[in-house]
Image (cartoon, rainbow, N blue to C red; front, side, top):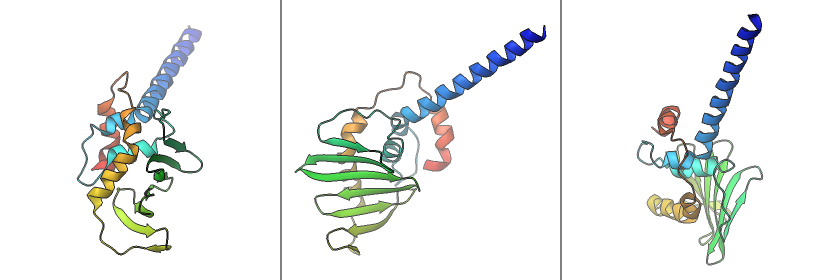
Length: 171
C-alpha cells in the first residue's frame, strides 16, 4: 500500500515537472510569435526585445548575410546592406544596442526600449543631434526581419500564459 502511494506521488511529481519544463521551453522558444500578439504600451517593442533576448532559444536559421553571436551578449549581425555590418544586441543587464554600420552610430536603449543615447563611433563621442526614433526602429526591423519571418507558429499555443507572465514587463 505504501509503495503504491509513493509511486503515485513520484509519477505525479514527474508529470508536473515535465509539464512545467514543456511550458518553459514553449514560452522561450516561441517568444517572438507570442510577442507579435501580446498587448503592450506605445513605444515598447516586444518583438525586437524577445527576439534578441531569447536568441539562444528561438529558431536561428541559416540566412545568407545573417550571423549570430552568443559570446557574452546575444547579437544578430546583418551584412546584407552594402556589405556593412548592422547589428542588434541584447546585454544581460537588460540593455539593447543597435549598430548602424551605414552611419557608424550606436543607438542605446534601456530595458523598456527607450532611447538613452547615441554614440558616434567614428569620432568617439555621444551625439546631441535629434533622432528620428521611428526611422531607427524601422532600420532595426529591417535588420532582423529575416529572422523574425523564420519563426514558426507554436505546436501548442500558450499565448494566455505568455501574456500573463509578461503583463507588467510590456505595459
